[in-house]
Length: 295
Ligand SMILES: [Zn+2]
Image (cartoon, rainbow, N blue to C red; front, top):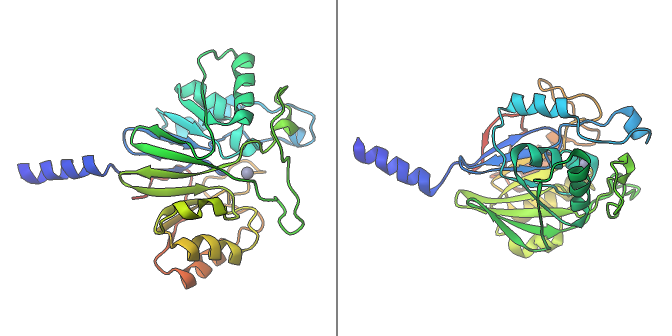
């Protein structure tokens, strides 16, 4: 008895459990029991006045409180943002302040963080600038940054939404949240290897660093097509598990019981086409806050 529990303890120390929790839109938390990473976590929803450009966009603090409580979130160590569009970046600074977490990113995100530091008087907000292909270590996680580009939001007509840097005079204008520094990541952890890519169009610069068989957390909005997505990510690398991101209709208030998809997601076709080229790849559609083991 003593030996078996000691062995179990040793095994769990060697392979800490890794848990994913989706937080709506493109956001998720990754936790190994010691360290919690937040990627693209945002709870603030733009209002019609924002879209009309008539109101600045700052964090909705009551919405953050409500979501943080619903998630039972007590600790975040590090914050990562795939690009600076509002639905990915708006709450990075507020969450960094709330949890004392370090925010990692490039010059565009830094402008938003610096503006937040002075506007809300958050002198302790922690920011660390990273470069392309840099790896940062947080707890047992090694997170490698790859600079990529944002896909057009209407791929068929090649329409890009706010492509460019966040301006140096950033003052929370809704249309100042340019895509900025666009990243995807490969995360190494003793429990497994994960690709995080919100890009929906495969980034060739990743190819030589993917071994195949990774877990993938993938944005599924703005795809060129289901076939393109499946050919590049699924047939290309036979991931063991895909957790889709950015599938829910975020123009309305969140509905945690019932998933309402953005137009063009085609989730069922993604799963069925993927099964044809890689039967070993599992897909799982996350629900808000649901812990999903990823190792
Ligand atoms: Zn987005």
